Length: 263
Image (cartoon, rainbow, N blue to C red; front, side, top):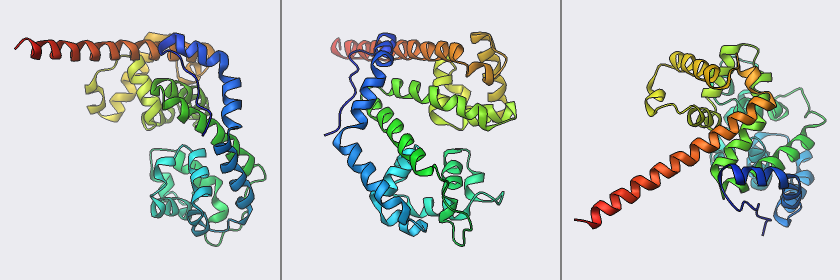
């Protein structure tokens, strides 16, 4: 059985505890038998992969790779993942280039050596990167089994700086945030945006996000928001707003229950 992260309480207090103990907890989690065995299998078999057919047939290696890119929910979508990889990334019409979720493009780009007729080899550091990404995302997933808000906060800390570096256009950065479900959820919750926000035209959503972020955090763009000081404020506000949301839901449920009992 894997080591389970310890989160004694939710909200800001739980977040402070997790940050204080994270290095030790993550090391213990990565050293647990389940994670070690998965990675031993992956490192032993990675070099033998020559095609997407090889990849999907080795379900254990396939699962490790998908989880490293945050795509573990696609474990049974073998035809879809093969199409993502086999299409490559060179052609603008390739499936990975047409999807809003850029995790698929990252997967396709790194696994280009599996494309039929590929003339490139796997990057020298790819195996090590996949191992590190698998460990990090697996720990985040384990945290999420206990507290999804903390998992999203951890995802924000990792993904927002990567997103900013991956797009030179400011608008492209905002569109990428909207296309990333966890980041979008953090932003909408932290900024207190109403449910109707999602029904707006995507260009209007970007305008609203820019204005709300500038007003709330006093930053001009996502580049500034991704700096540690401001990102810390974003995470803390997200956790506080999440707790308020949960309290409102609980109070609403209690009110409904009381009304039913009084009938």
